[in-house]
Image (cartoon, rainbow over all chains, first blue to last red; front, side):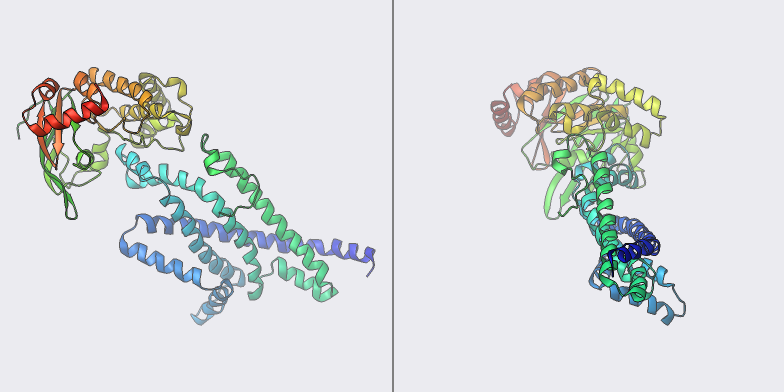
Length: 235
Length: 252
């Protein structure tokens, strides 16, 4: 295959790959959003809930963190028809991976909430705030700031895990790539492009999160929290 | 109970234990409007627990508390609305770390008293002015010194226009040279007629400002009386010993 042919191949595969990338992005946003909302409620229940509530949440969280993402995906996809209704591949991917992410995110937020000094809650209650008002106005805004670095890790893994949706037939980035490979027998070239697209999304997402972290950092605290503009974060 | 109109706080035989450890064994005292009382005593004698019972952060096992004629130990009472009337100043300031000094002071007005932002800001700025920190309104707690943080937290308590302010060792976490500014603010407050209950070992403050000293030990009030009496001719040898020790330690 000549250079010219390769350039033409890359050029013609870009539109389908872009379509796939959009689906990947859509999956990522839905998963993360669902995981975020559910995860915060789970974290609050685990920290402030009664014993039965926190026990239930702990079981939920263990369950979803102990089963491989691919198996969860199959359980949701094939399991739905077993129970007499049918989830589309896309929806089962959102639910399976979304619940899984909520379990991980609940631990991110639980850690962040628990690392806030209990004096903050006490001071808020002393002003006459209800527990709910104190959580909403005082605890969560602080917890969010602490949660951004571990959350950007969660973003990176969820983004890449969406490729598993391939297995139940969602036409996302990898599957679009497969379609092109089947036609052209150029796996190396196509997978490199796919890899670059994933890399770009991961990098851009982490850059944005690092930017947000810097933007909402509390003055006087930067050195303690550490500013990582655009870097991926392991901590 | 007598209904002396001048009486603001009545604490009647308060008991509290944590597990097997009995912290309060029947503490009773009264606070009149405009009075300042200082509670002293060795650590672990229930001073903080007593304050927390008064603002409902801890439920006493037995005993009753009245604030301005309302029994606040009544299980049916809405403690959130009662707490608006009781300010609290903590040893560790506990300013909300993600908010500026101004936001710390006005958040209670906006979120709890549901005041319009403009009026809340006006009141908050007045309070910051009162503690001498108006020019630091837009600083975050981490950018303020300990003494400044504690003054902001006093302003935060004041902004709610409380009937009573509880101070839990307000100067114990401060560097020596920062204690003075906080005590000065408290002194001004006491002189302006605020009702204050102060847990502190600042004897200079106790001597010059407060109406009565309460010596708490082992969960009971060993002795209480005006500072002149407590310092000069305490009735109980334990009081004498303790006052001698802390006077030696903290100076006059």
